[in-house]
Image (cartoon, rainbow, N blue to C red; front, top):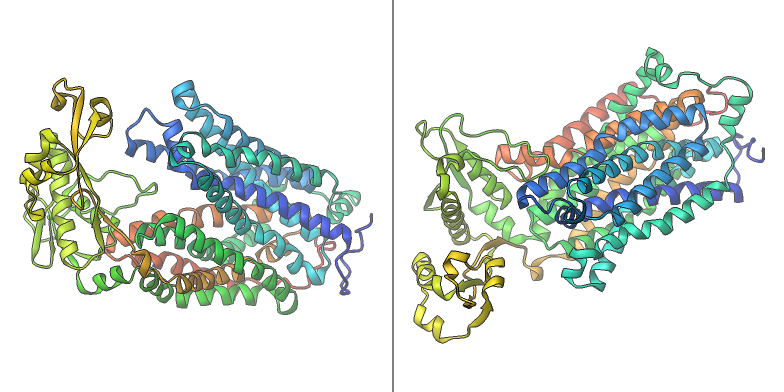
Length: 628
């Protein structure tokens, strides 16, 4: 075979065949990550299409649970396809994984919604999503192993680092295509059918990736192992049932991939969530800033992969973990001041105090971000957390009394959702309004949207909002719109009973009298600083992730390499990393501090740093052809 000599330790240039190997493996893996990210980015439109018969809260829960299913099954994909890869071959296996991923994604774009197919539509969607997760669980290990087994010993970090760029490039590609489609269609058309276009475009990427991979040969290390009859007959039991190999998998998980995963998800995904949901920067601006940081930082995956061939894999990964541990809190605080200085200032000067009865406050582990809380304390703290307000909880209230929230000189009484009964909506509106007015008075960057009020409800609206100092007669004498009753009911301006049989409704638009919303003033967002901070976070990602494929591949013998490296990688990234946003939110809500949840990635990274420094050996210089 032409590549049989690639294990040679002498430095040389990359051959044409090796370039094709790297390009084909990387392109396919970019495509698989692109497919995987599409679902998360388009979750709102998918929820409306496939769970339309449910209330919005329930719909969001189902949509995000389906998204989470892809993370949950990734380790099982690693087991299934890792075993096949060690028994049958690397090339065959990752041809199967890319085909499964591509077809699953394409079918999501074609799948009719629940309005047409009923309950069958979401059931099929769950199945397709799980197939995506299984395929991704098998893809990464196959691609990394395939490239590594073609690489010279002294350039393996550089060669495999191209695979490490794929997750970032897949995210980048998905963001770019979604933004392009959104800008080409109206908001209504995109929500109705335009969201399907990025999924359907995956068919083109699939065809290209499969065609290129079909031209590849099997990896030389695997071929040699088969020719010598040294292959494993039971890769799973050999990899994890024998302590000498299981120990390597445990060290790879706790000493490398768990820490690498939290640094990666924190710097590349949670930072996006933090800017959008915590700092309230508009989503399109955040996507652009993240895309710029990713575009600038992606080359460093290759830089650190190349450097790992000079000084070792372990020193670079450990340095990345150490830097992330030391600087995570300062960087996210700097991000707040750069993206929303008004919010940062208000958090320093105005803090809420929640006074509740003992046992009324629960730990808010909320994996989907849409769980409905019922106790008065949980409702209060969830509201404050959602609006990025720091708070302290004091459990000195008498049993059975509702929690209260004090902000400055104002105190608002919360409510129990179960006890409220048919007064729930009224109590929810009154509590939210009281808190928002107190926050606005305390300097928080809140704005009120315009309120659409039907003529039948105008007098009551004026009486319920004395702080606005409205004059009903002046409003009626101003601009008004005649709206068909059916549309007014659809827009929730009034109910059918309130319309009392009228065919048209007079509607007034009252500026700054509607719903409150925390926001980041676009004029105050320091784009250069935000992108700079995001770049630093991405740089840490490249340090821990760039050399990880090389060290994982070199830790395991050829006969169980695909299986052995895939499982710790996907447990680390699928579970330790995949559930990071939910865990960070829960910890932040528990403490009433938007930064407190960052202890999770810091502690996990510290665990991997300690275990890695003590127990993980550097693998630079490993000869994969003799490690069978």
